[in-house]
Structures are given as C-alpha cells and as structure tokens.
Amino acid sequence: MHELSLCDSIAKAVIQNAHGRRVSSIRLRIGALRQVVPETLVFCWSVASRGPLLDGSVLEVEQVPAEIECGSCGTRSELTRFNLSCPNCGDPKVKVVAGEEMLIDSIEVAEEPDPPAAPPPADMLTK
Ligand SMILES: [Zn+2]
Image 1 (cartoon, rainbow, N blue to C red):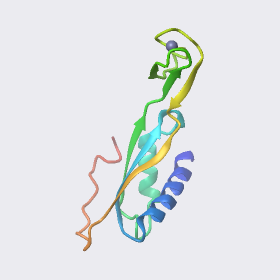
Image 2: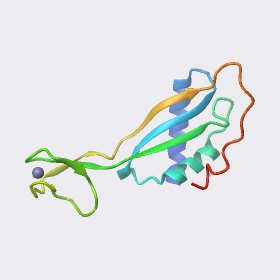
Image 3: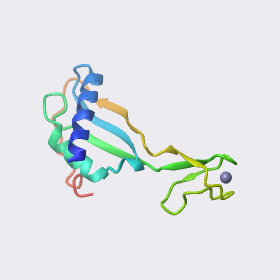
Image 4: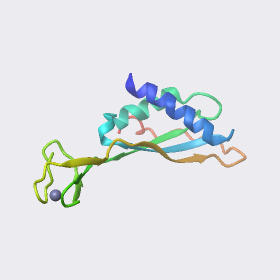
C-alpha cells in the first residue's frame, strides 16, 4: 500500500528530527496531487508508528490544494479538473505551483517527565 510506505519514510524523518525524544504529534502537509487519502495515511500511521519514540504519537494531515499560476497574467488559482487554463484570461499556459509537496510541518515532542498516556480520541480513525 502506497500510504504504508509513505508512513515508513515519515517515521524515519521524524525519528531523525526528534533527537531521541518521545514524539507526541506530527503535522504533515501534503499536496492534493500526491493522491494520498489523509484518512488512510492516519490509519497507516497508527500501524506504522511503533517503537519507543513513536508509539502513541498522532499524525495530523493537512491537505494543501493544488494551485496553478498563469504564464500570461500571473493569476494563481486552485486547480480543479475543470480549469486547466487561466480563469482570468483563459490562457492555457499555466503551471502547477502547489499541490505536489509533502513536508513535515512540525513535530511535537512529549514533555519530560512523561505524563500518563492518554487514550487516543475514539473518533481519530473514523473521521
Ligand atoms: Zn491568465
């Protein structure tokens, strides 16, 4: 599964940046063109985030809309499958300027000493 291998890469990057501290939550920004279903990614994270540093951590996914920029007038607009040309001047020479990113926005590490682990919200996986 695409999302599961993605989670592996996220886990590696998070562990690298956590410098041995326990991670409580991760915010991830992901472009709409990445073809990733945020709910699936969050579910996969609950499976992939094993280990002393990641166990119990929460992945928050923010989806970034895809945007195009017009080569003629510079107008930026959200890319939908219906507007592959500029909505302002109609020029089809647009380029995609957002929507392919995938980056870790922030990592929250747990304060020391560890508070007792709170159970994850029940609606976390069903949203
Ligand atoms: Zn234009």
